[in-house]
Length: 220
Image (spheres, rainbow, N blue to C red):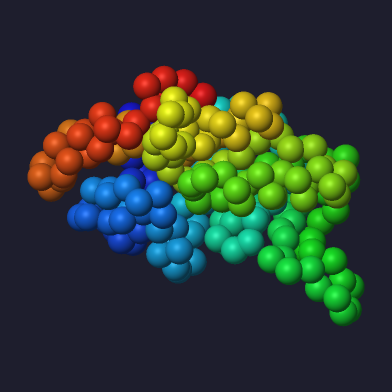
C-alpha cells in the first residue's frame, strides 16, 4: 500500500474518525465500520489529513487551479488542503458555498475566490449518494468554473443501490467525465487490517461486507 494510504488509515483510527462495530447507514445497510471526517477536529489532525490528500492527488496527476469545499465538511478540508499546498510552494485559491444564499451584505451563495474560467477540484470527505457532489458541480458550472476532479478521503466501494453494479463515486465520475481521487478505499482498509494484529477480529466482517455490497469492478 502507498504510504499516504497507510498514514491516512492510522490517522483516522487515532482520531476515532474510523471506528469498527455495527452501524446503520442511511441506506439501511448494517456496516461493520464507520467513517466520520468531522472527528479530524484539531489543527494537527487536519494538517496531517491534508498532506494525505495532497499526496494522493499528486500521485494521481489530477490538474486543477482552484479548491472548492462543499458546505459543510468540505469547507475545512479544502481550506486545510490549500494550506498544505501553500506549505509545498503552491498557492491555490479556495472557494466554498453556503447552504442557503445570503440576501444581505455581498449576497449570493459563494464565498472566496472567483470560479470563472478555473479548473476546480471539489474536496469532500466521502461520496454517499452523490447528491451533495452533484449540487456542488452544478454550482461550479453555474459560476463559470470547470469541474476538474473530486477528492475524497475514503471510497467505500459499495454498489449505489439495488440493481446497480457501480458505486456512487463511479456514477458521479462517469456522469461528470472527471476523476474521483480517494485517499484510501475499502480495499485498502482490508489490506491494512490484514497487516494489523490489532484489527484481526475485524477482517472477516469487513470482507463479508465487501462481498455482499462491494462493486465488482473497482477501477475508477
